[in-house]
Amino acid sequence: MRLLPHPATEDIELTEVLRALSDPIRLKIVARLATVGEMTCGEAGDHLGVHKSTTSHHHRTLREAGVVCTKQEGRMKYISLRRDDLDARFPGLLDSILAASGDASPSAASRDQSVLAASGERGRR
Image (cartoon, rainbow, N blue to C red):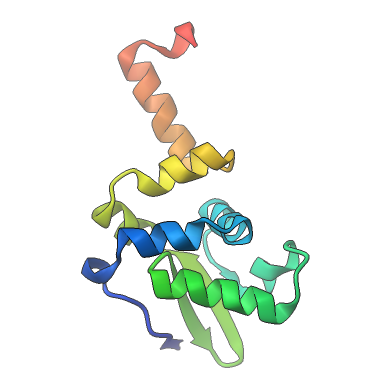
């Protein structure tokens, strides 16, 4: 297994993360990763309806911004979300962006339900 170059957690910049997530296709990739976890780059691109080279560009942009981790095993590349790194660097940012886009991840939805239940707001919504 070989990891492609990624920024260290402390080197992830907010402006680069926001730039990477500003594209609707990249946002779809991140939303899907938030739901399924890890997938091959081919699987990540199957539902996008864009050319393979365009998908590769989007994956590279997300990786260089520190949003995803890409590892290579033989001829296959696997992509996964760097949720822990992003949450450590910018707490709540990823969940807020996914919620605003309508693509909230299951973990974000369960955390929201926990907060609502704890605050007694659940019945008022």
